[in-house]
Image 1 (cartoon, rainbow, N blue to C red):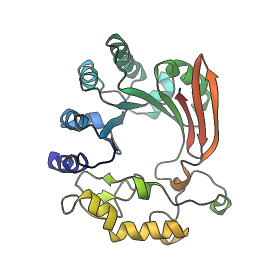
Image 2: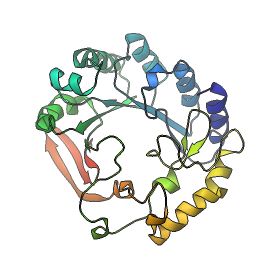
Image 3: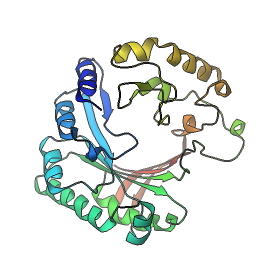
Length: 277
């Protein structure tokens, strides 16, 4: 993404009267982006913008960690699959769990040394069939040093299905993503949803209009929202075979004490979360 694109977005949303969460990652590793520090530093300077990103932590060097602590980034989510290097490294080709853990613990220890509250640290493990048994050890390892741990349901690449049973057996709700999320691709084009990785359906470009105007007035947004509100998503190219609308529906919610930590446990169709309280 050319800096002129995200600079235009920041110039707009920084003037809004509402709080905005800026998620600075997409379908890749954000620490590979050559302008990433510049982006985070500018975005973090605006009081109404909460900024964070997800990373596999392979490129989380000491220099990067020190920078993130200095700008007081709001949050980081670590995508780490399991606690066994042999399974982790086979799933994530080119990654090294031992190096990742060394990088993450440097940030954790430096954060404690500086007595910093931010960034909040979240951990995500995808429940691949061959590492499901590592869940308890994962919790034991990371819960004491995290704000949230999420175990995401495994979905094959390209799949937007969260269950195999008849979709009509679950009460439909309009997808929240269409009403509270705007996805901006590398070239400034908007996607309707974070699941549309290739931006097959775009409501407009940030280079041609404001984000607010596209989000509010685009005919594409209006069409998709209309059919979601009617419960007729079978008419929609992106949504007819998608369960993501149900991903945030709470199936179970309770307070727990795990490994000496008080947590809020939430189970949804997309996985389980353990939030420190």
